[in-house]
Image 1 (cartoon, rainbow, N blue to C red):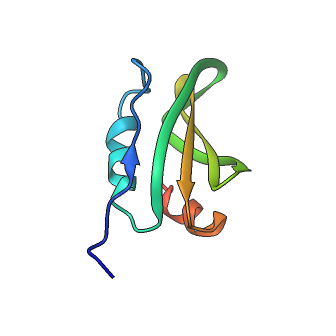
Image 2 (cartoon, helix red, strand yellow):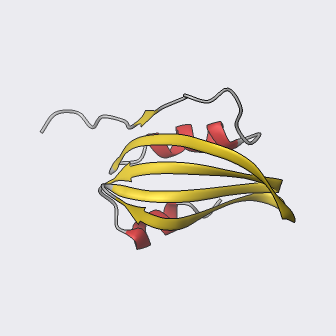
Length: 93
């Protein structure tokens, strides 16, 4: 076994929820996290005062996660070998 490699954070959008990138960068350092790609950002009616990350649906090789803060929602795609339960534990922000 070689030294553990960290995951990759793909920054393909110009806008992100404030504070989200810092959280995602920390996640890339965890074993089992391969690639994290922030996706579409949109608005919602409900207001969430603190950052919330929650698994939405399984995708091939990982999970789609919804990040919410205030009235803003952003999709995040996480490719991982972690189970849904393991990922839910590390997403507790």
